[in-house]
Length: 431
Ligand code: BUP
Image 1 (cartoon, rainbow, N blue to C red):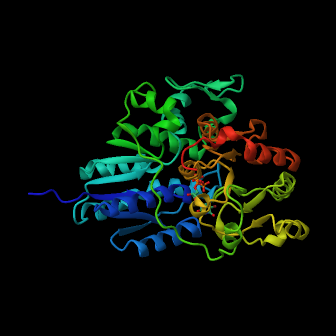
Image 2: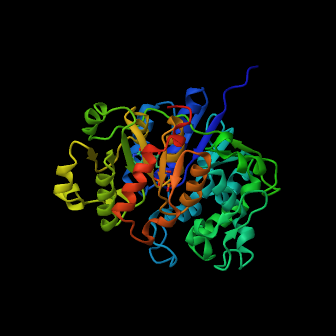
Image 3: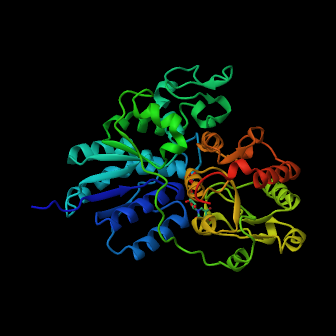
């Protein structure tokens, strides 16, 4: 008898940064004749998530879909955060048990579950009861994964993050400078911290951990974690990145494309801080000055709210009309969702100002696009350091976290020139 192809159930957590790698995996597995079931939580936090899921399913008619209702958290139940994505992580974990009947009755039977790190603790007992192997998908850098996996140990010692220390040490890997630790980790009762620590404790129950990264990019961390030097109870670590892309959903407004097509090769700076970072209006103004001062061409996708549904501002409210006027031949500013993957693949792009969300990093590395790292929150400072060490980008540490202080247009302009003129950043294969 020939074995039938496996049936993989994929369970992402909230936010485009989590959904995107799962859709890429779903597309890849389905094109290699696996049966694939995509599990999504409803309602989603952002409009981008629900529209990408519907579009993906319409393009991949063979992929099955299970949608489950999350039990919402009470607005005041978590005094440590009002971040809608963190609240959704918690609500998803509280609701995963609802999947039990649909996973148990799936046909053909499910061979393996691929689940997000952020649901590791809640899916583990369900998978164990059903006798289905569970693999964790890590959507961040291996270096940040180590910090999350080791968090329970760090939290058990109140002095781990004490401000008197300059760095945080984890066995086997290079230390983390204290400023790169996400501020919520210093508060053990912060919702995000307790969720991550609980998920970390469930990692040993997984069959394996698949990471969207690769040896050449993070060798100094992948080698020790694979050989058990970071934690000795982790299952096999399997780097599978950068994940293969699939034909993405196109935005409605692609009017910048003919402009991009007519720009010289590698001449344009692409600017985006991901789907969930809102810059202050003062910082947006300084960034506009910096772009103009640099003299380089640019394509900029500004965002002013954490959740896209709340984004009501128009370009003319954000930027002075005179700026848009003066730069109309030099640059384009686009409001709303763009296909970043297509933009980064465009020959005119020569640099990327990025918050260092890990998907953005893996998309840039596929084409060897040099990055100016400007981390805003969570894993992004650790990711920025990885990018810098790999030789794909520069990072101005004194700019700090996004909302910490205002970075002037003058400084930004200088860094953009450095980004675009540094030949050492242009040695990555792919260009
Ligand atoms: Br914004 C935006 N178009 O307009 P990250 C993002 N993306 O294609 P984040 C677009 O969303 P987390 C847009 O290419 C990447 O695949 C982008 O993920 C795509 O950052 C993804 O880079 C964004 O990991 O998520 O959104 O801050 O904080 O969850 O990592």
